[in-house]
Amino acid sequence: MSKIAFIGAGSMVFTRTVVRDILSLPAFHDATIALMDIDQERLDAITDVVNRLIKNGNYAAKVISTTNRKEALDGADGVLITILAGGVNIWRSDIEIPKKYGVDINIGDTRGPSGIFRTLRTAPVIMDICHDIEAYCPNAVVLNYTNPMAMLCRLMQGESKINVTGLCHSVQGTAEMLAKWIGAPMDEITYLCAGINHQAFYLDFKWNGKDAYPLIRQAIERPEIYNEEIVRNEMYKHLDYYVTESSGHNSEYNAWFRKRPDLIERYCTHGTGWNPGVYAYILDEYLKREDTWRTTLEEYAAEPVDAQETGHAREYAAFIFNACFGDHTLFEFNGNVRNYGLIDNLPEGCCVEVPVLASQRGLTPMHVGPLPDHLAIMVNTSARCEELAVEASLSGDPRKVFHAIAFDPLTSAVLSLEEIQTMVNEMFAANRDYLPQFKGRI
Image (cartoon, rainbow, N blue to C red; front, top):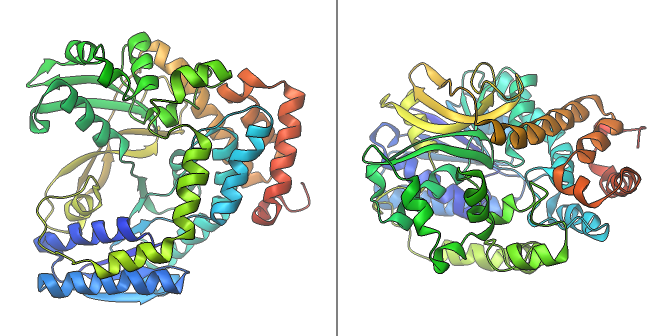
């Protein structure tokens, strides 16, 4: 009987979806689902939903509901990590302080000044989780869903002995979007995708074994499709490969789309997926959901729980666990792992997103080879800034934080070095209470 632990289980939609997927697999009908969250109210709500899933599906599974992380992890075969360190208001400062200096960030949970400070806040918490996994379930398969994905996975994989990879929706989600655009059934699509999280590219994309990129190029000439993903479609038109993550995210990872108001209006206001930018997403949507989360929980708790819903979500966690310690059906996915001989022209040891095979042997990443040279230029810049930020989180050296942000493409396109230093100092001041590793140095 397997045990699967959710650390940060209070994410209602995610936890409910993954638990349903797990229970639907025969190997996990009698699993123990350990739900852990520091918020008792959220924990109680998701526990009720999971218990009803088990009852309605007539499963032999049982639930552990606890605020004690060690209890949840003890003896676990699989672990999922979905946490937010510091809460929404400090995340808001990640966006609003750069905005004051002219760095107009759209989402801010991956890289750049906002992603780096999010990493610095999360690093101490996530390393505590890693140490508990080492102590209480050292052989567990650990799946991280917490952003910033690349920097946190690089930190965990470099500084702990746990068997961890990171998962993101963008690879499978974008593949489905492209298939829809060209009218192809998803089961007839194959692809090779590699790079770093949110900056991975489909090195090939085939429909029944034939190159489908010409069809994609034709599709984006249609206004309704072009306008759906303006930034990514512009990148594809000029870079020749399609990037995985949404236009909203990718608009802030480079210097081309957000450095001037006219560019933001042209490329980012109407087709980023997060209209019209930072305030619509962060303030109007996320904070509004935070203010009404009790209502949201009540709605989910009240609606029928169908344990027999057909199909699976885009989440791959259940299939990975099944391959590793369920019925051992092989499963391939794109995961975040360290670059030891995987992508030839990215930094050795950085965190890359490549195909990974899940099996009884564990998680085996696959060699991809080099990225196209022009893509490698862009991705190397992001990867090296991430490496520097991870070093900063470990050493507590604020100078490394400044240097990591100074070379961020969007930031450096907008600000001078002196202005960047002033902005970083203000961000340190806002985050002071969340950065114990910098104590006495900021």
